[in-house]
Structure formats: structure tokens, C-alpha cells
Image 1 (cartoon, rainbow, N blue to C red):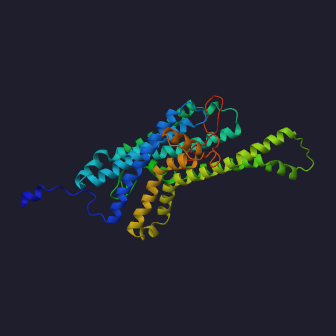
Image 2: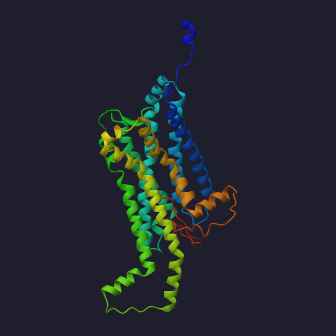
Length: 365
């Protein structure tokens, strides 16, 4: 009997979970994998259409790469927890836990800072609409590289300290090596990361309202109201042209507003959830375990969904590019159903069309 027991396979780390928890764990492995495939296909489609100057090539490539990195480690962490015995899972965390956590956090924070870059890009386009040299494709790649290097540096410092961070799937939390303390850089990132998506959202909304006011003549009306003696000469041809342009771009502004709000919401879901838990710890602890776990996964799984929602659901130009790449034909063209918006980083070539970026807030994108 003793020999029989000794030859039995050890139980997995996930054994003993309730059916509800086990379902959430399995879903958290399958769900990111699906969007890993989407990000890979979208990246391939973007590279295939790299000569299309109307596409925000750089931002799509960067966001897809970040998305693939994020979803890969999400699937890896959960799958290993579900498959390995408890002792082997602990050994895995000791050997690779810090590295996988660093990679996942790196991709998430990089997306947040790319959002800032995209917002600056949009502000620059509004200020100098006919001078895009500062944000051409090559320079945007350089900017993204600099951002990635800075984010990686900020994460490597805690990594080599005693306050490294490891994400434990069984606890659904990030555990510090010097718990209950954390590295000052980690504390700073956890505290102020929420500012980035919300700030970008408000700036982008300000840009949208500014463009709408300009095209609708609101500023001119205000000027006449406060400066009644001022006489303005308007050339009829120019007025007609502006009116036509304003009507064409009105719906584009609406799509851009929806896109901006969507990106900001997706990028702030995780941070907002952390803020709520820190602000109301007692109330959160009183919730049933299945509710807390479900809320965690709602925040956690919103990250891989972001690129799909932004670049496929909300942005018509990239959706059509993606469907053409897969040879999926639309029965009815959606050119008028979901028009695109201005591209964030156009090439230094004659522009053939206009497009919206995913972030980029997003992301934004």
C-alpha cells in the first residue's frame, strides 16, 4: 500500500478549488490566448500593409507587440498554476516568478506611457497640422524605444533589490519580497499610474471639443459677442468649403471621442480598481470571495481585450485592413457607418486617407 501511494501523481496546485474558481482560472488562460492570436494577426496585417501611409503603422505595431507580450505571460502564469503540483509551482515562482512578473508589468506600464506619447502627438498635430516631421514613423519608433528603456530601468531597480515583486496566481496578488513593505519605485508607480490614462482622456477630450468649436464657428460667435465692434470679412468660397469640411468631420469627431473614452476606460480599469480597494479596504474585504475573485479577473482580463476593442471594434480603417488581410469580405461597406479619424503619426508622404489610432487615447488613444 505504501508503494502504491508513493507512485501516485502529486496533486496540482489548483486542486481543491471550487468549481467557480476553477472556471475563472481556466477562462483566464483561454481568454488572453485568443487575443494573443488577434494581436499577432493584426501585427502581420499591419506589416503587410506597411506602405499604406494613412495607417498609424508605428503605434499599431508597438501596441500589438505589447499586447502579445502581456497575453503570453498571462497565459503562461495561469497554465503553469493549473498544471503543476503545488511544490513544483513554488519552485517555478522561485526560479522564474520575478522575471515573468517584470515582463508583464513592463508591457502594461509601457502601454500607459505610450498613451502619453500619442496624446502629445495629437496636441502637436492640432498646433501644427501641416508639419508632421517631429512625429514621423521613424521618430515615433525611437520615442517608443526610449519610453520602453525608461520603463524597464524603473522595474529593474526593484528587481535586483530585496523588494522584488512576484505575481502569485493562487493568491491573485502581487507579493513583495520584503512584504509588507515595498520598494519606493513600486509604491510610486502603484500610487500615481492612475493619473496617466485619466489625464490623457481629458486632454484628448479637450482637443475634440476644440476642433468641434473651430469647425462649427463657435469661437467666431464668441468673438462677435465679446467684440461687437469688430468687423470680420469672410470669403464666400472659403466659408462654403469650411462648412462642407465641418459636416464631413463631425462624425469623425464623434468616433474619435468614443475611441478616446474607450481607451482611457480600458487603461484605467485596473488602476481604478486598485484605488477603490485601497480606499475602501474593509468594505472590499467583506465581499464574498467569489465576488472579489470575479472583480479581480474583470480588471485583469480587460487588458488583453484593449487592442481588439480599439483597433477592430472602434476603428473602421484598421478593421477593414484586418478583414482584407484575412480575405473576409463585408456584405456592406462600413465606410459611412464608422468613418475613420485623423492619423496620429502619418508618414512624410502625400496623404491618401485618414485613420484613427488605438490609443491611443489609449491604450489614446
